[in-house]
Length: 152
Image (cartoon, rainbow, N blue to C red):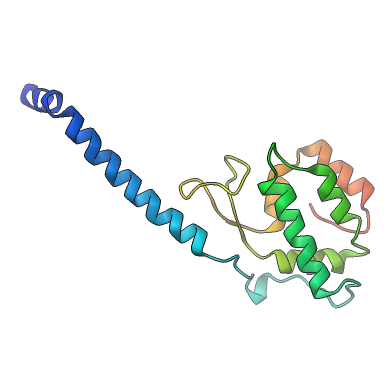
């Protein structure tokens, strides 16, 4: 036991450098995999019905992109006003479903509340991200202000 402690004390700097390089290289690999991976589409079993949607595919995709920006990539936290403005464009549940389907699965860290890093983030759908970003009072506001859609 004593010899292990002595060896560690004598070789602390090289051991620290090696451990740091191993951690850095594994994180770098994960980081490149994260940035190179596109948003994932949902499996057919996970898609919501959208036959009565009043918005086009292009509009749904644009709203989905804007929601992701407002929820996850906006500096300083969630841009609630931008989220509310997007939800106001939805006329019925199928409109929301179409946006949800176009949103797919996106990189998100539940811990940090942002796009995250390779260690603390994974792919999540729109409802999971919104549920994490909005507290109960904000969720109630969404329910009351946009009764035509059910998000939570």
